[in-house]
Every structure is written in C-alpha cells, then in structure tokens.
Length: 318
Image (tube, rainbow, N blue to C red; front, side):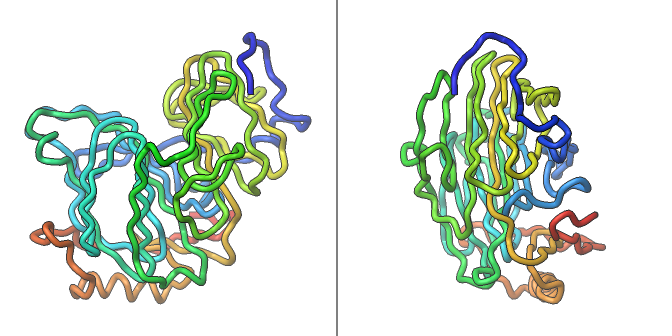
C-alpha cells in the first residue's frame, strides 16, 4: 500500500463489471426513534462470507436525558459484533455480562442455542448528552456451533493489532488479514478490518479470503470505474485483484471470509439452518423460556407480528 498522486488506478486485470460483483446501498431503518443504515441482508446479496447482517448506527447526537435503549431481546445461531467509532454503549446479557463498549473495542457475543441481551446509553452519558457512531454485524455460525453454549467476550482496543502502511491506518477487528490476526475468538475463517485512508491513498484488498467486500463509512473511494461514497458496499468477484483509492479522506471497513455450508434463514433476531428451529425460538420467546438479563429484566422487546423467513442461501432472493 502506498500514497500516490491522484491518477486513475487499475482496479484489476479484469473489467470493472467482473471485479465488482454486487453494489449495495444502505437503506434507512427506524429502530424506535434511532435511525440506522442497513446493508445486509439485502435483495441483492444475503451474505458476505459468514456475515449475514450489517447496520451502521449514526452518527447521532443525543441531548441530555436522551440516548439509546435497545431493550432485552433474544438471539440464536449467530454472533453479534459491536464496534464503535464514537460514543459508548452498555452491554448486558443473560450470562450476567455488564460491559461498557467504547471506541475501538470489540464486543463479540456468541448466541449459540440462545442468549438475551440489551444495549443502552450509560447513565453518565445520558446525563450530559452524547454522540454515537458505530457498526453492528451478525456472523452466522457453522452447523457444528449453531447450538453451542452462549458466550460473551470483550476485546479492548489495545489488544487489536494495528499498523500504518503507506499512510493507511489498518486495524484488524476479527480474523486475519494483512499479516495480522486479531485475538477475537472466531468460529470460521473471516476477516473484519477498519481502515483510515488519507486522500489519494491506495490499498490492495487482501486476497486470502474467498468472499470480500468494502463498506464506506465516511468519505469516498473508487475501484477503477466503480465509485463508492458513504453508505455503499461493494462486493467483489472471487479472485479479482482489487485496488481501492480514496478520493478524499475516507474511512472504510473490509470484511468477508469463507461461505458457510448449506443455507441460512433469518427470522427477526434469529439465524438458523432450520426453519423449524426458528419457529421453536419464536415460541420460546413468546412463552418466556429464554433466560432473563440480570439488572435489566423489567422490560423486553416483544416478538413482532408477521415475522417471515428470509432465505440466506448463497445468492438467494428476498
């Protein structure tokens, strides 16, 4: 990687159409007074590697007395991955975890056969007002781990490998890429990288993973003739040689990995290879059979009416 004059880079020896397989633009979603940009799942693409869900939270500004209140809700068959650029959230779960997450940290919660958690603005931040900007992703679990015991791990910023390469600041948040491996305990081959790119800098996309994508958090980049500004994901063709160039100061995340075996279905907050298992999870939540969150068990998010299965197979439609 290097910083070069602003000349048009070659994205690949292939044509741009073959390099960029799918373009996904974020769709706004209102989560009860707080808007997110949703990328995955989409009609164009259901998964990238094992990643099956991708939300950008904010950037949002909260006045004193206001904040985020994601009430207790359940998950099965996935791992949630929370990463903040600004602000702070307080994570609680049914295992008894009570963990603030701050910019640069990773919260990795493996739901397995079932977990309940909440995420809220901490009281001290709510009192003075705050900002919030970050990403929340879901990673679908391999078949052998779908019904594993739930777990929660917190990884402080200082434990995640980072380096400067030609002016580009790289931080590996999970998995392996660019000669670095994060200490985050993952269950299938993947990579998740935060990168700050100065204007006119270039980065070659890692080639060690089968499925790869870039999401523009802020700024703008170009891959040959394919542009991407904030809120756009480019999913690349397998084995394509990809070079990204920042048209101005740009923050991106790179992600992907090996596709999972078989199909995955998503229904509300549940992911599974079995539709019957999804129905069981829904009934368990309705009938109160999931565990409660210590210290946050007064309220909860009810199961929405009319939840439907979404086919998470490779290339499946909505």
